[in-house]
Amino acid sequence: QVQLVESGGGLVQPGGSLRLLCAASGSIYRLNVMCWYRQAPGKQRELVATISSGGNTKYGDCVKGRFTIAKDIAKNTMSLQMNSLKPEETGVYYCNSDIITTTWAVRTYWGQGTQVTVSS
Image (cartoon, rainbow, N blue to C red; front, side):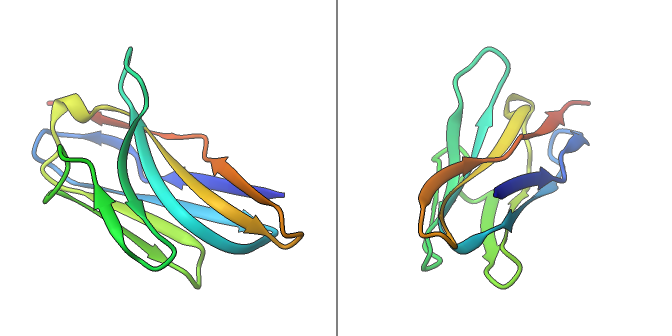
């Protein structure tokens, strides 16, 4: 069984920073593309950033230059450093990954989400 668990969310003032972490565990052979999504209250889930198996990164236009996605292959973790946060970025942040399991199954997994609140 494979699990993705996010951590690091919380309350931060506008202009502040947070670092989110996503830890993958279980019967993992390899993590392929990994992503961060967020869902603001009353809105659809949106893609924030991705990192490929080779380490190539992509960002949503609204977070370019402020957010940084990274991963640690040895630890099966992914992070999202978020700087200069804005109130409209309040929401639940989810990690997502296409994972090859040790039984050669390929599936997309989601974490349970971590709440980020940007407010003064």
